Amino acid sequence: MAQGELHKERHVAVIFPHPDDESFVAAGTIALLSQNGIPITYICGTLGEMGRRMGNPILANRETLPQLRKKELDKACAILGIEDVRLLGLRDKTLEFEDETWLISKISNLLKEIQPSLVITFYPGHAIHPDHDALAYAVVKALARFPAETRPGVWCQAISHQRIEALGQPDVVIDIRAVADKKIAAMKAHLSQTKEMMKELEQKIAAEEPEALRWVQYEEFWTYRV
Image (cartoon, rainbow, N blue to C red; front, side):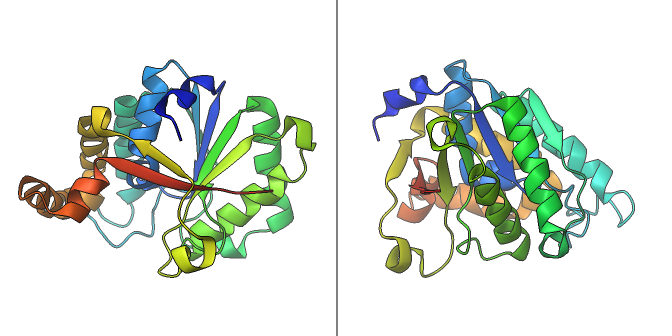
């Protein structure tokens, strides 16, 4: 995909279940869209309150973790230029047990209000975490309610081991080198979840390890045909 095509988007909806998913999956793409003046809405399913990481040193307990993760999310969104954050208020690690009809309607109604030209989410069935897959399936089913002529495009991130075998190579590759610093900063904003990981990753980037370098150079997506 040509980098300039990002300019064509009218409004982008990013839909993930946890605070930090947006930074792991699409921080560079979001930062580029923001720099291009494209409005971005982040629909976030939960506050990650069941996460096992409390920071190192400890920054929260089970009761205070959701408040801390909300602050981290706000900081990451500010770095990436996301001004509109919609919290679904769902409970972490339970999305697969939600009333799917309700969840699909909730997302469909939000998308009708936002009217995005592009939706970014996980690839259903290739997102390895039950929350990731449950929300991704709800998103594509919500989009199926839209008439084809008004349905936004869908870019999905697939992270399963068998993704290439099952889906082929990603057809959308975004060069994010110009905003790599923002991707790193957004990841660091989720301090309770990423502090140790980022220390190791930055060491690998400094050592120019190919996989680590690619993480801050390109973001890859698969177009989902609803």
